[in-house]
Amino acid sequence: MTYANIGTLGARPGRRDELVALLTRPSVELREVGCLLYEVGVNDDEPDTVFVAELWESEESHRASLRLASVQAAIDEARPLLSGVMGGTAFSVVGSPLR
Amino acid sequence: MTYANIGTLGARPGRRDELVALLTRPSVELREVGCLLYEVGVNDDEPDTVFVAELWESEESHRASLRLASVQAAIDEARPLLSGVMGGTAFSVVGSPLR
Image 1 (cartoon, one colour):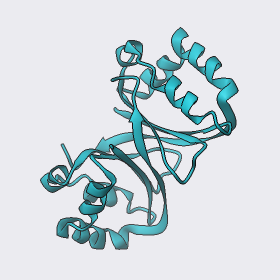
Image 2 (image 1 turned 45 degrees about the vertical axis):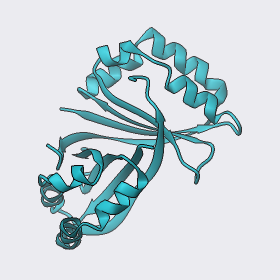
Image 3 (image 1 turned 180 degrees about the vertical axis):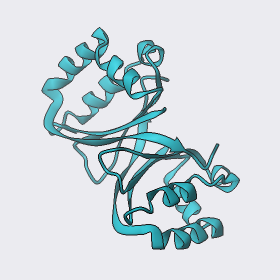
Image 4 (image 1 turned 90 degrees about the horizontal axis):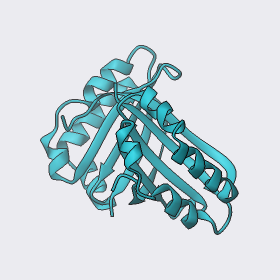
């Protein structure tokens, strides 16, 4: 079942765009491990927050992505950019009015 | 710029699946007005919540969808199913590691 993961990542003041650059770095591996969609974004209301909306083939493919060496390295690289404030939610997709 | 709208809709106890059925009712109009993705889901942690993750061609196309008679009718139809607890966030997409 398609798994949706929605996240908010707090960036240290002034470091948001570096975090965006890191999260949008091209990755063939994510698709290979089952990532269907990975949208990174920002809004004006929360200038120090980076938003991610992800769809995965399954919850397991999402978990598998976190075990990838490249993802582990990106997480380490992101640490100094993060404020520590994080949020999000996850759900199983049950349908769409577009299908 | 692609606009992401993420929402959580609280359902009255026992009415979640009716709300899911309503939100996943096929709609050609949503795509015509600029909806790129509209995923509806649930999770076990919040049994009375329906989650939506939407992508739109623009914030304006999202707003235009809310003016559609069919969407207005669906909102009215959903009212008795809703607990009134709602949440969500919206952001402009700036990139993806999959592109």
